[in-house]
Amino acid sequence: MKELLNLSVAKLKRMAALKAKIERLQSQLEATAASASSSPAKTGRKRRKMSAAARRKISLAAKARWAKVRTAKSK
Image (cartoon, rainbow, N blue to C red):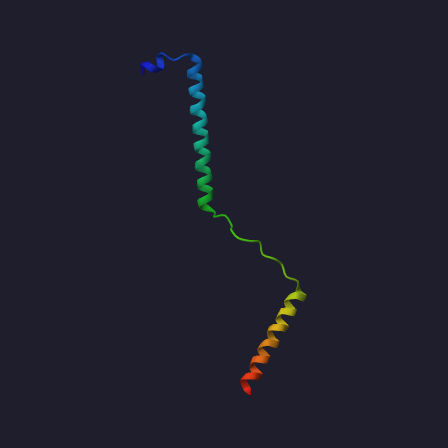
């Protein structure tokens, strides 16, 4: 306690400002940690949108492949 009495006013003000800044940063850190734990961030890529024509083309190709498999099985 004696050490605080021997400090200058400027140093005491600086210490108070630093303490306030530390408390502010700690509260920001706690808020960030709370928001991160409550809603996990999405990871990965965005989904691409496929046109109806492309979906139809893929569907027809898959049906053709399965038809080929079925005909080969029946022989």
